[in-house]
Image 1 (cartoon, rainbow, N blue to C red):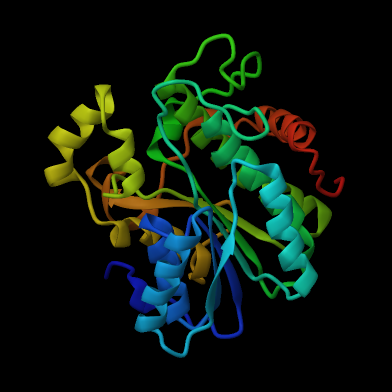
Image 2 (image 1 turned 120 degrees about the vertical axis):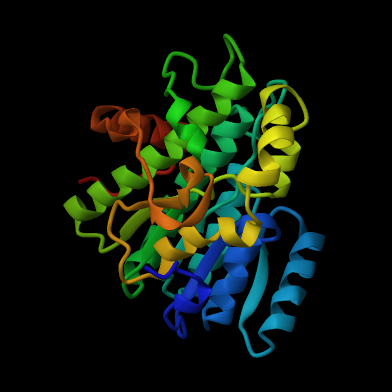
Length: 307
């Protein structure tokens, strides 16, 4: 079977897409591919200068494309509300939300503007709130999809409800897998709730494998991540553009399925062509997913419709 590439993306003309973390790495590659396929793309990020550069690069590749930058800091609920307010104010249906932005393996405990542990707060709670606030626009879209980026790291994750914020004990290489497990639990539960509530939204997840991105480089400065970078990167990693393919497949392919989880299909899912990815047992726990959803609503103050 011929590997799936960006050439296989169906025309996206007339569709509006939001890509978080779209100013670099995987997010930029996702935004670029969607714009080149004809979508109107909102590049969402926390750095306006990087946003301008990203938009210029995409416009050079697609001069007639509709792409613009919007400020969004997922480590700030105020910023999430402001971003969602601007989009809701325009009233245009949203066809695709790619929850891509993330932070990884902070060596010491850091917190968001709202006091959440940085990785859990940014990677999960920020995207949870954003999706809830944009739900009215997503429900107006044509065959709307929400794609949430997880990671191979979710397999080592556990949702520690007794210490979600790492206040009792902080371990950087426990906090990141917890946040990525939360991403996958959220994606699967979002589909269950969409089905139960008739929201008409298709929720999927993806992971990039071992992609050479700024996130990976920043996480690989010490300890096991440094060993991973030094020893495995030369033969087990692939480019950001290749790492973006699973998310693009989930976002656009007619062969993608609700609750689908996609990643690279070779080298223990570290690289290779797009294929269905392994979902760890703890990500399939519906009781944990429901509890995490309820806790996330309380922490963020953002509620989804009851189902």
